[in-house]
Image 1: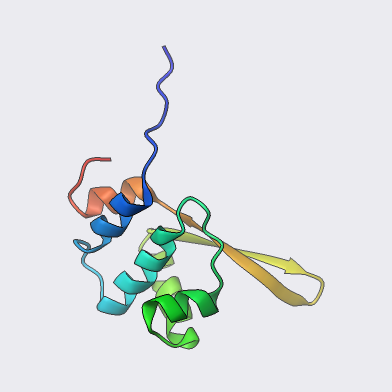
Image 2: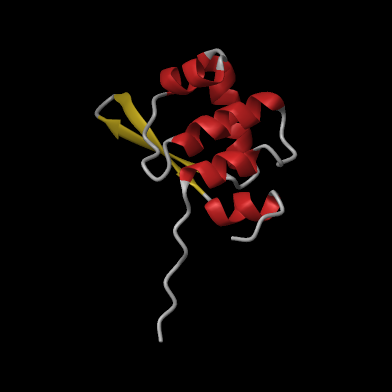
Length: 102
């Protein structure tokens, strides 16, 4: 019998972020991404508005969250300019680090 992976709800991820050992800015950025889960396509501008942070600070937080293994950032390029990015959130790791069962 095949085991199907458990689907996570964005509100569970948002609440789990509160218990992670992250800076306040990182939590706000990660919560903004979790709010969009499972469609992680918000722009840096939108994340900045949701997190009340500058775009530059959001980019710094995204790099930090990526280094911590909580998200993956996928850059999509078309020609010479960067078009969009999308984000993969690791829900199991996020819930596990927050002390919740995945």
